[in-house]
Length: 489
Image (tube, one colour):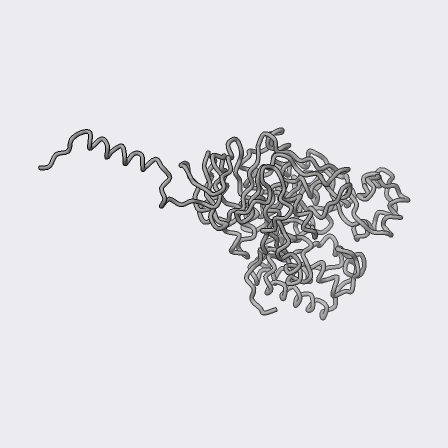
């Protein structure tokens, strides 16, 4: 038997140990590594210190060990979360999506009002957006087109106030069907803005949604910030639950805190009861006591004989002034956006803390001195004011409401959403890295175009849109999120 001297054996062992502790030439070097952050994955329940390796826009490793990357971010003391997903957004300009990116959002969707022409909407955004984008085919714009309503964004004439003939209903159904075949991710219905839409019309739209295995994103009838005392808010919710039960089309109820106001707790209880009985109904909220809408819309048709106190609840965004009877009438002739200060902090807390609510902004384009702070600060406000300061819900629970649950709402219709809202190997590298001790909203009703604070990094398909708290205004990695296309254009 051959023997080896101890010095020779020790040398071999030392060499092996040295090689094992050096980065191997054969070891994977990732495009980007986010090191030593508190990784929170709402799907698996992971909440611990990990490093995340990203390659080709995809998460390839989530590890307690050392990962090597061409670009390395030290996330010590920071939270690494899936990018926030906003199911309720009305913005048109890419510049407004930058406010969303600075609020941690990596994908936003126009689902409540929806759009008229799916192909055109997606084409207008291709290669221009910092975050991902998607849209519903909208009952409102389709109905406006069929009825010849010339309102801006929302109906102000026959699109709201006139019924449809059988031929017009067939045209509405045909146009919505075409939008779904061209990859719309849902069907949007703002029933509160189309009071003349009767049950049969809505039933036909719900049936169509069920046929395509998609959900309806609905602003329920009779429920809004502009509705007066005595509005039967629960009736509108029960209407869409009945339509869902009858057709099998899932339903998502827009901004429950705004639709519900003082009835929010009761309406959340109705949703919980319906879910226990097998109805696929979900909802969302945004964390502000004021709503916003177009002053020329149907909602204000009944406002010509209100009290002075009611008019004072309205704020004209272009000037910041609170309205009077005279200015209300004048601005209604002009048309434009108005804020409605009609809710309470108690209602907001009820909605934010409830386990069934997702977080969604209902935001839109913002400009200096004009807009609503929800467009820039929704997600940071929840994490800063209601998680850290008020302790209404845990950080993992808040992240679940912003990421996994919105992804699950979409993934039945859009398979690609199964790789969003999660942090795991194979998931898309859409990530938000933030400081849980600093994150806060800065946008106000008077100064809505203010970036949130505490967002350190935002990656969209592995590309930095925000890095070191600074926005890259040239970055445009956002991609279309679209359901499978069934027909040629």
